[in-house]
Image (cartoon, rainbow, N blue to C red; front, side, top):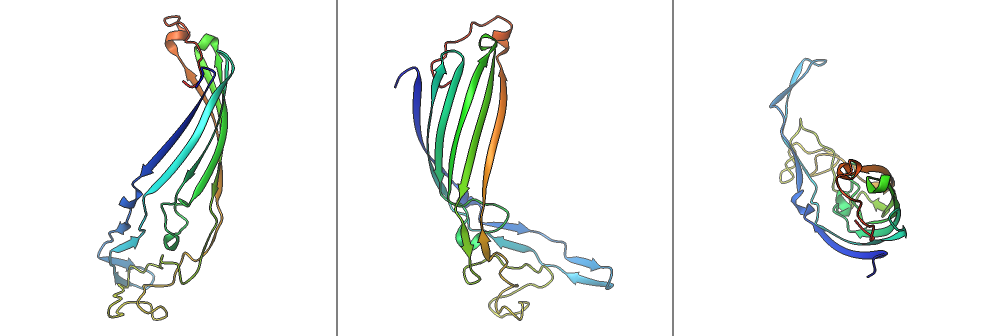
Length: 200
């Protein structure tokens, strides 16, 4: 609303539902040297069932010292791509909240800019029970046919093996970045420095 500061609100959608499964293609036979036997292998499909996400992001910056120093503050909320039943240790795309801030310092008459920022991301805690978990132990040497039970683990009827994603998941992370931008035309005197008017 004024040259000294600005505020921006964004809504975003991402089509993560394209990630439905991992498809692992194996050779037909694997040789187990210690036992001197060949094991027939089957291809594996690990179902993931990711879902589309949406997020809302709010932030802004303010000119603290005209032509010299700017400050920034913002945050975001993003919905989960990974459903509860498919929670696993590879991707922690759960409901999340992020808060961050930063500073930009103009140097050498606008010929360089030093940026410092910090963000903390809060991931929702998740607890997955044995009954809810759908990530199963994979056994490429024994194809499981749920309809007949052939090749399935005798302890887990109709399944290739045990549920392997049950448990409690606690996660979050911190991002600290430092950047330097050089404007060569200004450093070489070919372009006059632009007036600082907030976000650039």
